Length: 501
Ligand code: UDP
Image (tube, rainbow, N blue to C red; front, side, top):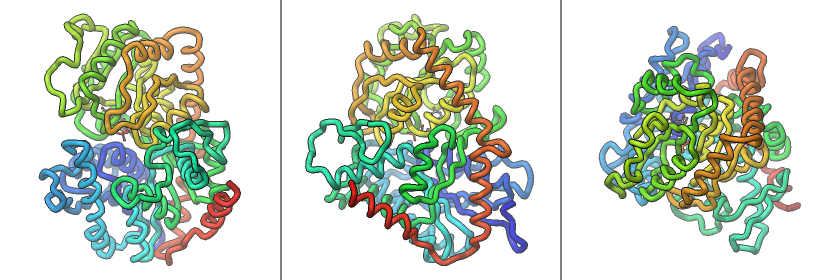
């Protein structure tokens, strides 16, 4: 599959330069490569080793190989420190703007690569809106990788329409228009996804460009599975008229513990040490706390988490990433580590998250609702305390809490920088107890297990994601190099919805 008489289908995968984007894109490249597609991952020199490490673990034969191609990152041109090529290493929040500027400068070298290698298709991150034009210049299809759920894709589209129609610019919650289930959000949840007429700079401009480039792209690849969000997947395709393929959960392509332990960065704890600690615990007795790859909490927030975890009385694994502007160790209450010896494991840095979530001792997790972490928890059958920070995480929270009923909100209400809303320790303790103990907790855990049982068959032969991936490869194989197709039907439907809303 994926090969023509002349040459195998060749796809460029171009993830945004953050682990939350690189991890699922590499998983996707692995999936395509397993089907005989030649997969080339484009990245920058500092990010290449993360990818080559994963590729090494995945390599099984020459046919299945994944190639890596680097282009230089213009850090100096935009005033970033040398080596700052990943969102993970951005020194402060005000440097995000130059970082995004630098990523826009990747267009030219990327186009040189396209001309040089002439792939059949580009799967590029939503944060590279210009990739649609780049692909068009060489007459090939550009697919968008958003890295979020169908639910959030649809909600984001509808929220933009609400803003066009509404004169109410207060922060009172509103029901998302043209969206099932009376889901309420506020402007502070939706952040830059509210359509902004003055979106001429920074993240707002990028969101507008991304929206526009998605409309002109060939379609969208979604890291989700049909059984999790049927209504939203159907609507996204049938009503919004988007061409979309669901191929997830992508994390399931990591079949052995070596692959599961080596995603993203080098773990800050030995795999066996972590597993040994979990082996000493009863099933469903440990809560796993992690805020993804970008969130940097202030000392005061970390202290509230520490006090909340202690007051909950639950065993925990807590992955800590501190805000660089706070120094010192006062983020932990006096003698916390001594009191928590054997009860809590703190990982300062990077955790082997997939391995941890899949362990039977894990009873729940506290998450910032990044889509990868959310889907990984669903896949492992782990219910969640939801603590959204930024991005589309507030929408993902709605899916988990109000639609799937497998989560308890901690009460995070505002998109504030990269550290989020401050939550009092009492609220942390209450939410952790609610997700871990009692009848409601058991009910949510059982529901989460049902979704987990649906997730795994989805990627197996005959499953919904397996079939969609095959259908996508077939379609791409039949296209070859083709003139760019603008999705006219989608545009008409989008306009119709705008008029009737
Ligand atoms: N992750 C991990 N170890 C960590 C933190 C994160 O393996 O200590 C992985 C996690 O499994 C997920 C990704 O990093 O695949 C984070 O993606 P997500 O969408 O959840 O959040 P983001 O980092 O994009 O905010």
